[in-house]
Amino acid sequence: MTYRAALIDLDGTLVNTIPDLADATNAMRTQMGLRPLPQDIIARYVGKGTENLVKKALSTQLNQKPDHATIQQGLHLFNQHYHRVNGEKSTVYDGVITGLNLFRHHQIKMAVVTNKPSEFTLPLLQACGLHNYFEHVVCGDTCSQKKPHPMPLLHACNLLGVTPENTLLIGDSAHDTEAANAAGIDVLAVPYGYNNGQNVQNLKVSDIVSSIEAAACWATRH
Image 1 (cartoon, rainbow, N blue to C red):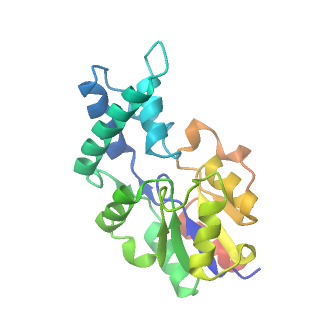
Image 2: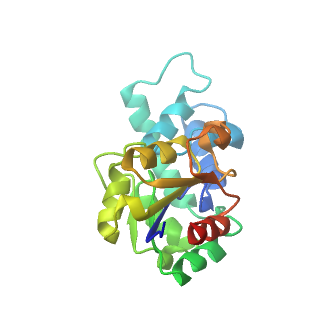
Image 3: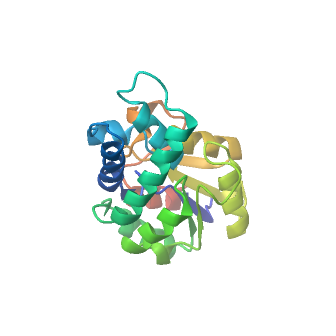
């Protein structure tokens, strides 16, 4: 198999965004009269989009699920705070830069595919110095469906001019692997991400790799 493209998840795969997401989430909760949550709890809510993060964060320690108005208020406050802190404490994982350069050296096209809204994704990539590596960025509001639906992955393939059969996805969660399997795309999982606190050993993947650098090495051997 010769891979022509690599689709890479953002949060928990390229960048550790939990510190900033936790700051924004807890600032929102404080304004709404709720006490802060530990970072490890908030990490379990990451990966399914901003609305899910807010909904889960507001459901914690409440006796009932938040209604629509409460969720909308939470989203408004979260967005305000996240715009302020996005990229401040986020860090690029070890092996990412080396791995992206390896993909580039082997002329493997790259795109980010994330459930994160574009208003946060593009500034974060720039803040982390990653934006120039990717030909395209598919965000949570690019398509009508998010991961685990295959649509964002197939859209990225179309943008890159490749087929699913010669494309590789690298992610950290079941949403990534389910989307890739549905799209007919080979998938690698990294073990250091979020995945709702679950072990990636249970995911349906081609392999588990320790880093983006290891993923690039794997791709060039297969």
